[in-house]
Image 1 (cartoon, rainbow, N blue to C red):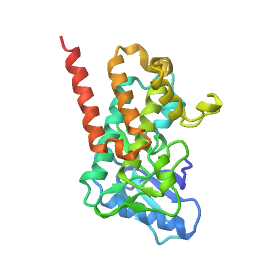
Image 2 (tube, one colour):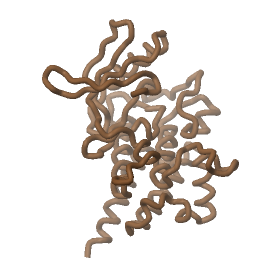
Image 3 (cartoon, one colour):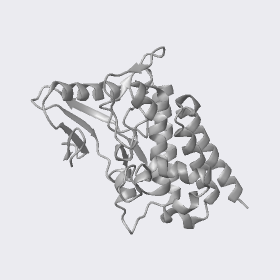
Image 4 (cartoon, rainbow, N blue to C red):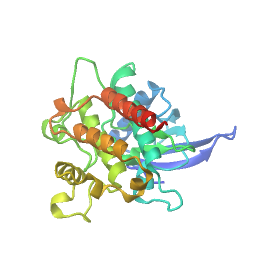
Length: 277
């Protein structure tokens, strides 16, 4: 399987354990640095919703990383190339969003050194055999000192997910990951790609399309029809309002990932209690 920064192979260890081997696409200093960075980042992390690094080999001509194998592909595949027999219902989408929010909150708050992912998107969210989320791909992530913000000379990330404030200032902060995550929530709600020529010229950006629809009170008209028929309209609307706050152009007005994770959990508990007779 081709990845953004290399090729990923499925293999088996002598003990029968299935693994994923990530092999660098090209051999250059920048690529090796990204692989080393990924080793450093993942060695600090133990979280059930973050892919587990099992080992690495940096002495070969092409560096390789060895991960636990995650069998059910990416969230992006399930949203945009759906299996008609398994259309990823809203309950599962909501749980995945909650799991990813918890993982990002852990990276920002609970890891030994705060870690910013810097490329959060649906293709970097893997689904295991029980369709639980596993955040992956930490090649561009950054560990930071608590007292410092991270200033970069080159903007990194994926078009359609990029925080406009980060794009202008070149300063990546925790609220930039919040913006990235907001785009993922909108993907889960609407079922469309972050950039699409199928929408009008003014609405090529999914964020613009979503924000305008929220402003005009047309959310229900643009939701993915696969999630609308399950009777969880209030929950979906609450999550959409949270996404809008995550996508605020002013980073200071966005919630933290800790707040986002707590609010998603609160929505889940509130809706569940309201459905109990």
